[in-house]
Image (cartoon, helix red, strand yellow):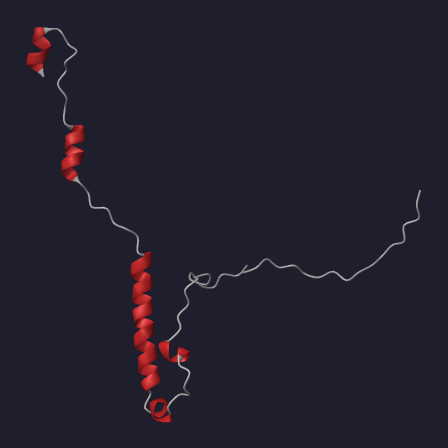
Length: 105
C-alpha cells in the first residue's frame, strides 16, 4: 500500500448564483436606462438645479414599466359561447333503424 500523506486545505462556501431572488424582474435582460445617460456631453447645471433630469427620468421610467407590463400581460381568450353550444347540441341518432325511436328524439 502506498503511503498517503494527509493534506489539508481551507474549505470555501460555494453558493449558487442568484440564490436569493428579491424581485420578480431580477434576471430581466432589458434593464431600464434613461436616455440622458447615453449623452456624451456633461450634464447641464441648469437642468440639474431645475430637476429637469428627474422629470425626464420619471417619464421614461413610467413608459418603460408600462411597456414591460403590456409585454408580460397574460393573453385573455374571450369565451366563444356559440361554439360551446354547437359542441353540446344533441345529435340526431342516424344509427337507429327503428321508426318509433326517431319520433321520440
